[in-house]
Length: 159
Image 1 (cartoon, rainbow, N blue to C red):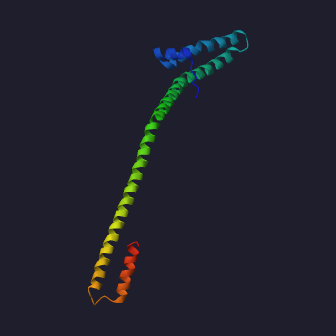
Image 2 (image 1 turned 90 degrees about the horizontal axis):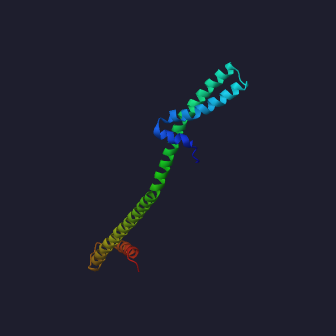
C-alpha cells in the first residue's frame, strides 16, 4: 500500500494540531484559486458564496480525514510488522506441539504393546499351569478342554 503524504503538512502536524495544520496549508491555495475565478468574471457573487461554503466543507472533511487515515495506515503497518515478527516463533511452537503429539502417540503405542505382551505372558502362564495339571493326572479335565487349551496356546505362543 502506497502512503499518500502531504510533506509540508506532516512537519506541521508534529508542531501543532494536525487538522489545523492541514487546513492552514490548503485553505489559502483554494481561496486564491476561487478568487481568481471570481475576479476573472467566471463566477458571480452568489456562485462564489455557494462554492466557497462547499469548498470549506470539503476542506474540513479532508483536513479531518487525513490524520485519521494516516494513523490507520500506521497502525496497520505496525500490526503487520508485529505479525510477521511472530510467525517464526509461532512456527517453532507449532512444530514442538506436533513433535509432542507424535511422542505421545509413540508412548501410547509402546504402552499398548507392553500391555499386550503382558497379557500374552499371563495367558501363556495360565495355559502352562493347565497343561501341567493335565499331565499331573487331573481327571476332571476333559479332552475338549485339552483341545481348547492347546488351540489357545498355539494362538498365543508363536511357533
